Image (cartoon, rainbow, N blue to C red):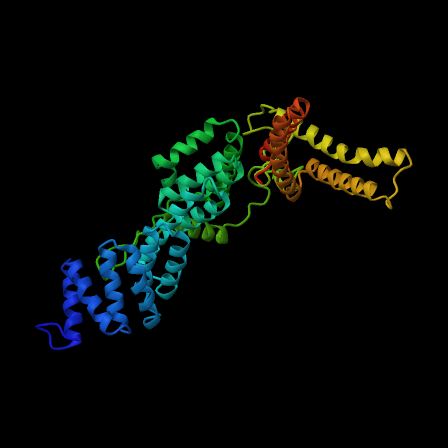
Length: 430
């Protein structure tokens, strides 16, 4: 191809790059377009054409030359970064995450791609907090791990956990973030809210105590005589910049070194007696009011915070949960017992067979609820969700037919079903 004033295609490409560097994006895009029209297999021109369109915020148009450029420059991370940026601006977050992951795999130290990936993960987390909380949690957790000093992913995770009454997850997140991040206003707000919420406060306080115990165990013994350690100067960095490591990484390394050299104190220190949790059977401190592993309230055991004040952690939700779970189990067993007493439990009868099997499944689910088996709780929640739709449909049919008795029965069933879902959510994070 020829453009007036330029003798070769290389000069034309250099001219386009010069225009792009000067911020003349419209002119640069026109030059690159002429090049790729004349030579559709020029990967460098396709890449620069996509960059010019991206600078013009023509995100949709930039995707076509980006995709074609990848065919000729498959290992170029910069093309993937630009393409992922465009997909993110078009709110195609799943595509953007996939593209940016490839860019980072091609060039692990591509900082802009990592920053863009974190942005996309946070945006997807915000978008899915209501419709798909599990995927939102996964996105925000990955964004948090990409940059442990950024408060936004952690703040959004606290918001998600608090809105879903996920007490154990919120407490675990609290222990995972470093103290500097906890004091950030966007996170301190949620921590203060958990401290003032009677539902979250016991679990959070227990996590704080466990953290204090771990810090005490890993702390070195004070020296018996004065020891002066010379402070080494910071190593000279080639660029004149001193690298400051992640404070959480520094703390983990220091604690691991102390743990390696610190001998066990035979017979010394406080006697930290542990007892098995009545729910998950894992060891917990004898004074624990709430199990930090399964979040079950430990009934009538120990004292809280070592103050000797006995705490009654039984709530009306506990009592209601066991009553409803018992009724669920008895409701399944009743028709089987009735048929057995009447001498009509004959499995060759199709109707009797169906009633028996359904009753047995309901009874087993009720027993699983009584023992708080998490898988059973998940199954029951899905069954209850289906029952909600069934009740809603029954209410509409009853209204249409003017069947007021059926209407009342369906409303009562709907209320009981919703109440059972609330109780399951209250007892465990499922």
